[in-house]
Every structure is written in C-alpha cells, then in structure tokens.
Image 1 (tube, rainbow, N blue to C red):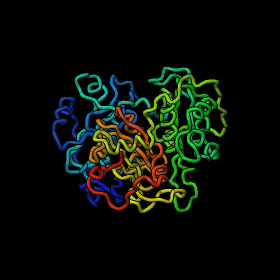
Image 2: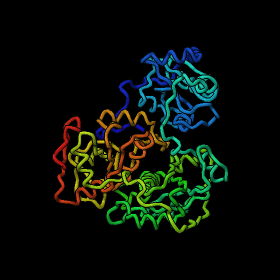
Image 3: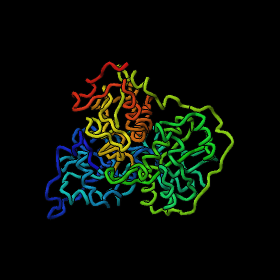
Image 4: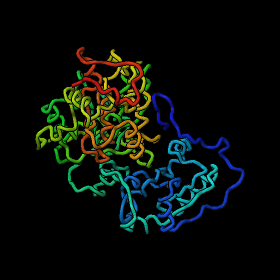
Length: 465
C-alpha cells in the first residue's frame, strides 16, 4: 500500500520502532469529552484516527447518525484493516507516529478501545479515546465535519445488497437500476462468480478495439440500449481486482476488471447516464463483507432508446487539440497517470505500443508500478484511497481544483480512475484525455520527451498549442 514516488517506495519520515511489541501494556488510553476532543483539533501534532468503515468516513450515515462524515484532519484506518498482516504499514504512510498524541474514535466503545489496545501494543503511549462522536459531535451542527462531496456515487456492499433485494438503500430514489460486472473480453471472469443480478459488460462495447478511445455517440447509444441503460437508469459498476504480470501475459488488461469498471463508468458519465456509481473496492469488498457470488448468468433487458442526446456530458472527455491547449494554458494541466518508468521513457507500458516517453509539459500523476496497477490511488483492500491524501499529493505537483485538469494514461483506464477521484471530490473542471499516450505518440508531428524532467514538472510547459 506504499506510495511509489518516482518509482521508489515512499513512506513516512518517522518509521515505527523496530521492536513493535512492548514488554507490557501501558496505562489505559484516556477518554476525552467532546469539549476536550474539540480543543485537541487546535493542536498541530495531534492525530485523530477514524476506525469506522470507509463508507462512514466518506459521508454515509451507516448507523443513523444525524450528520455524515468525519472529524476534519482525521485519518481513516478501519478497525477491519487490522486483520491484515501488513496493516501496520498504513500507520507509517499516514505519518501516525508513536511519540505524537493519537485520538481514536468510531461507532462503538468496543471498536475504539480495540484499536487503542493494538496501538498500545505497537508502542504508542499518548493514546486518547473519544466515545461520543455519534451522540454529540455528529449531532451538533456547530462541530465541523468533512466528507467526500460526491460520496453517494461511491457505494458499499450493504448498499448494493439492499438494491439487489428490492429495497431502497440511502440516497436512491429510482425504480430502474442495472448492476454491471465489468471485464475486458473475458466473459469467463463473469462466469467465475458475480454479484447476484449483475450483467456482464465488456469494455470493448464502450471503447474502440482499434484506437481504445470511447466509441462514437451512435455506437454508445446502441451499446447502452442493449444493456438496458437509459440516461435516467442508476448504474452500479464493479470488477474483480487482479495483479497481472506484464512480462508473462499477452493481454494483462483481461484480468484488471475493476480498473475496467472505472473506465466504463467515465464513458457512461460522458454519454449522459445521470446516476453512475462505483462499488468501492469492487467484488473484493463484496466478498470481504461475507456476501455470496452467483454463477447464474443474467441477460440484459434491452430498451428501445437511451432517452437523451449523447454525449450528455461532453466535457468529461477531451481529444488531442484540447489537450495541447491545456498544456499551454496557465489555468490547465495535463496529468500523466502512468508509472515513473513510463513517464521517463524506459518502457511504453503496453505490448502494442512501441514508442516510449511522455507528452512534453504533462505533470506526473503517478499511478503506481505499471499500466495495470493503481497502488497510489487505492488502499490495500482495493478501496479508493482517502481522498485528502490524493488531493495533497496532487497539490504538491500543482494539480489543483482551480484549473481545468485532464488525466491521461496509455489508453484511458488509469486516467479514468484518477478522473473519478477528482470528480467525486467535486472538482469543477476535470476530464479524461481519451487518446492518451497511444494517440499522441501515433502522430509523428507530436513532440515526445524522455529522461528525467525538470523539477517541478510544471516547469516543462512548452510550445504545444
């Protein structure tokens, strides 16, 4: 789960002590009142930890609390994560160090105390617990809360289960939905097991197999109609995470289903589907929640008409001329969601792309290790990384919401996932440069750069107009 910065593992500057297990338990963590917890917000070295599920942290009111969200500045470390062998690495990445005060809160006294005990065993001796988050903090309008602005579009397993069972989950006011199991020319992945009621969606039906760009409006209209999707249908997309080995697989993308789901979601949003949602963590989160899979194939129920003009949101996708304008603009950035090895030109990242290098003037947005992984945008359980962490990393690279930001990668998959992060944050001007490196390098008139860029990368802004 470590961030990869310039191709190198990047962890906090304050490593945990080598001797993780203490010889004895420290004093019990001190319990704070709401007034005391609020006063701690003003202390710069105090770190709040939210041990509730990520959905609650993002804004979902899972326990009927008056307001959803989290205490400003709190880090999301769900208690469930402590079941993973390497969860301690999360503490390093989030700079939660033993010699700083740590305040833990959650839905229940038991889960809050459980995290306190685990941190105590790791050498944290300035621990506090806060047990009145739901009853007092969330109930008091004067207490600040943060949330993911479009958290409703990032759903959780129980939300999907309610939908499948015919109930109305929170923030759903519709009588028409389609659940899509995304795959890339790999229907076997669907037959291996899918969420009950889900239909298979091949990414090839939404993007061209020649250019890997989105299909034409006419083709998208036909595809969506065949899938039973109108502009006002609620669409829930997910896929199966995998870890393809580039050097050993001819088509690594065939097993990167959840990444394909994010690509499909961006294209559907572009087409004009009003309510597109992502199951956070994909099918992994469904299985982790103890939900069963189905082997029963479900056939789509075709409709006659999408019911609206396509594209309904043309601003979601841009092409090469607009990408060149953004490179030259003071109020725009073209962001490369590629690995460092791709960015500096050591490899193209794809079996079918020969040319290596980067688009001059593009800002490095760092996906992770290669073309089929998004470690820097996901937690180790494959859920989307805490949005403030992504936003802070972008800010350091000059990627800010006051600009028109267009994300690109090789052919649009990774760029689409980064786009979803920014879109869910409520950033007003975000797009996917659909052609990406594949289209850019296919035109010999387009400039290419290799090697180490200047620092910061925004200094490379060139002549591309």
